[in-house]
Length: 634
Ligand SMILES: [Zn+2]
Image 1 (tube, rainbow, N blue to C red):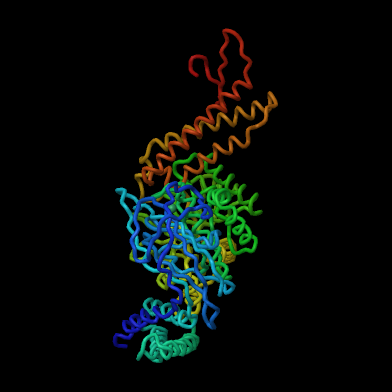
Image 2: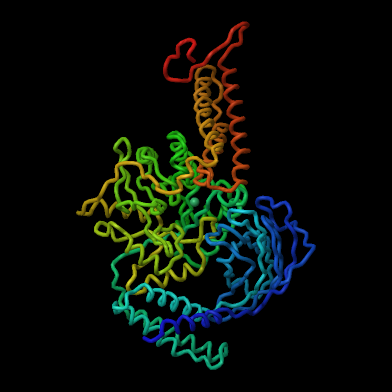
């Protein structure tokens, strides 16, 4: 059809404008500087001594700012939802730079608000009530490079109605048009889908945009479109399991203290969206982040625990955090698993059955054995698709370790836009859904693929649009159906598929070497040196502590050793120890490593004192190795 698609995209932009009825604009906020930028600051004692008008710019680098407005929600209205819309600044791609904020309603964390999460749905019970909205804005950093002031604009803020029929028309049309873009012109679904959208849009009366006639005609158009799409058979026997996700680098282009706030914002958003989208399933894989939230925002942590119990929130992944797998010792990899699994079991009642390392720069050949002995039966990554020269020949295969242990391994194959790489930060697009299957190299053994969707690497996560689009893509012809599914269920089903296939399942026997980011072996040498020194020091402090316990009956310093180990494990994060983070991260690492080294050295000295009786003109030598050392050679 002649320019039909182009015409429909233009019309869709116009439809988008009428989704909101901007009933109560907010024109001014009370404001207060948050000079301390303290972790988990609360709104209750903030003294507001200034104001910021909507339309004004605000700027800073690593600046925190409080904004407050008291709002009255309008009465309930049929076929609408109460919604807030807040456009306060620019957030960099992947939340790697720029603006983020946490919205508190009547003093309680409610949802993260940023460029990708401007909408906030409010429950019907808010209708007719008054509430205090407080935002803790963060200007953000520059996302690497030269420190730069971040300038943002307080562009728009309102409370109003979301018009559900128009919203439905908008998302269904968008999903249909995006699907058309992925289908070949010779595919009959291409023409049928385009016809269905065109017929619906021809029913819209545009003579007076925004008029009751125009709005009513959009509702008619929506009914036509829904019927039209239903009549086209799906005809695509491939499934996609959609795992809600947000990749949060524990430190990278921001510091640990920023990550703690990122986690609070991202997790609040997940919890809030789960109220309106009960099918939404979310995975968070790093116990370190749960430990931070437990300390900083116990009220969010309790809600997370409730959602884990319900099965909507999946706390899995395996390691204490998503650690580098090249530089840490074998013992450190074991401890990543030990501390990670222990936390999951103690806090949530169940260890993980899979290792989730979407973004780690290469995988040691020792891992299959360590993983299987840690209760892990499946390994997942995406990063290996970034390889510079050689693509791994399979996406679902058995990975064989040094000792012959095998572990089922699966790579996510969702294509990153305009790139050969696959992404763990899916945006729930037709291109990803179609591309997952196109790129997949083991079509004969498995027809269900995995998609991790949600903004990252700096958190953010899934937004309302992704959840709405998922519902619609599930019914679109010519692309895989896409259903929410936990990663645990996906991997369990994959095991069953692999066990029952009559097709040959390939084996990779060796390291999963990553052909990229090679400078990570040499960058920031100091962190690597401290990591190794503390790894070796911990061996001595643990050995001596056991010996002191056995020989002298002293109490084994479990807590102290765990604290030192956790500092070491934290700094093995896949952007800290490889050397890929900003300078401030290494300033923090220096402080942490110094603390760990000091504590461990003191512990060694304490245990040597426990084990040794001082005598005049006598020195005691200790040999912690497993072989004899001749005099003069120790
Ligand atoms: Zn990462």
